[in-house]
Amino acid sequence: MKRIKPIITADRKRIVNLLFIVPVILSLFGIIIVRSAAQTLPDGGIRLVMVQIIGFAAGALIAVFISRIDFSNVRHFGQYIFIVSFGLLLLVLFIGYGADELGSKSWIRLGFVSFQPAETVKIAFIIICAIFLERIKQRRNVAVNYFKLCIYAGILILLVMLQKDYGMAAVFILIFLTMIFIAGVSTKVVLGSIASLLIGIPLLWTFFLNDARKSRILVFLNPEIDPLDAGYNVIQSKLAIGSGRLSGQGLFNGYLNTRALVPVKESDFIFAVIGEELGFLGTCFIVVLFALFLLKILKMAKESNVVFNSLVSYGIFAMFAFHFIQNVSMSIGLLPVTGIPLPFVSAGGTALISYFIAIGILCAVEGDKNIQ
Image (cartoon, rainbow, N blue to C red; front, side, top):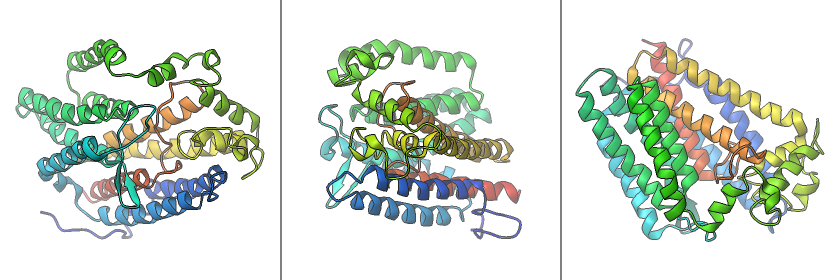
């Protein structure tokens, strides 16, 4: 095993680069926006803000620690990573809780602390996929390794589906499809995987989605058909964003925000708060930062000299890209509403820590690339 390398040296900027700086800026920005979005809660949002600050501090420290390791060695621990991931997701099915109206179970409560295992398992999922895809790219028992990949990935996706967290399951599936495409798996195999998913949609609709979830999809293109129930969230979100115009109504001063007229505004619809209070300029600020961040990951993934590291980077890119696109798009009515948060900005300590775990991995990969 290679030696553990230092965090920052003159030629290895493991932390002082866009991979770390942009998430820090977004997280600090998110703490302020969460405070504004949660001001209508009974405690004025203090608890949510404290959770966000603790999540940011813990996540940043974890990122710094992970950035110091030789990440390519993680490929040797895939079996243990899978076992822990499997155990966590299975545990949710027995002691988890979630949104009653959606029938979901995705959270575990331990005393005064709650966490969502699937957020962290996403990172493990990417690592597991990268382990098998590296073997496939190197032409090592291609059929056997692709079969194993589908079994391991399929088990984790199925466990998330059983939690009835279909938005999260969709992220897992999109990460999987992106990674097998990037890895150069046969186009026929990729198209076959997509076809299988499409075939499964009618079954999902008939046997798995309850009325609340079906309503979300039915009002996706026309929220006005049910403006007081299923379409309410999107209508209010679009009104808030539109009312912000160029520069917004001012931080902590959004009309719809301060009157609690935008549902779930501290997490799912936090983009609406940004649009209302900081206007078009505020939303552009977020979009530009994410664009720079995602382009940096793509550049690093392409330049990495280690296949495993490159595949993990592409997987993390897919995770952040899908989260960002889904959250912003559902806020403006371009995609159906799911519980997918805006990375680094939406309230959620577990999610924030998992994002910084991914950042630590990217910084470790960047450091490995720079010294090879």
